[in-house]
Image 1: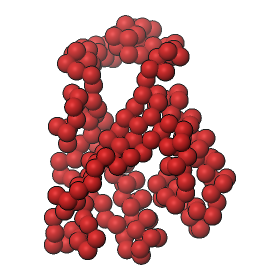
Image 2 (image 1 turned 90 degrees about the vertical axis):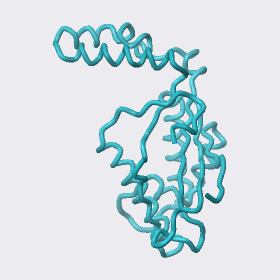
Image 3 (image 1 turned 180 degrees about the vertical axis):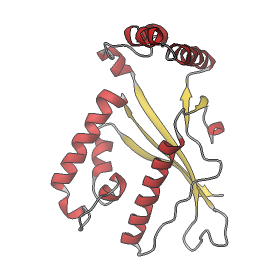
Image 4 (image 1 turned 120 degrees about the horizontal axis):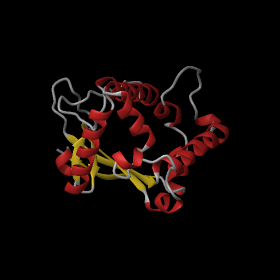
Length: 205
């Protein structure tokens, strides 16, 4: 799927446990939505070739990340190196990290885009005897993720809990965000405030 991006893509450095956690959340949400909407559970299985990638601007950014990674790898192995990394994060990350945090200008210029590719089945088809016959590409994009988009999402989730009570699950328990908010107007609220959800394409394979 990395080849579908127009930017340079590198694998996300994360543990298998973190990836499994995301997959479990998706599976739990899909099962809940399927059982409550149609009475039939929706089965989500990760592809054998599934992976997470982050896109960067180009070869220059990749080289910077490689050198920053090498600095980090060597310096964390000794006490003096760790102290230097903590004291001068901007120096060893080529300006990517600092103790001051981003300026207002940097936050105004920053944004995020997450693109998802998936395959599945149309109505009447299933995984028992068929290969996936549908493909879909969706996207979520918005302003700077940490200081701008996160507060927007948290506040709108709280507003949804207050105003869309009748659309929340009827029974108590522990829910994933997708299961808890699937019938609410949360996505509409986020779309109106700059965090946009969209379907880029959907077609038969």
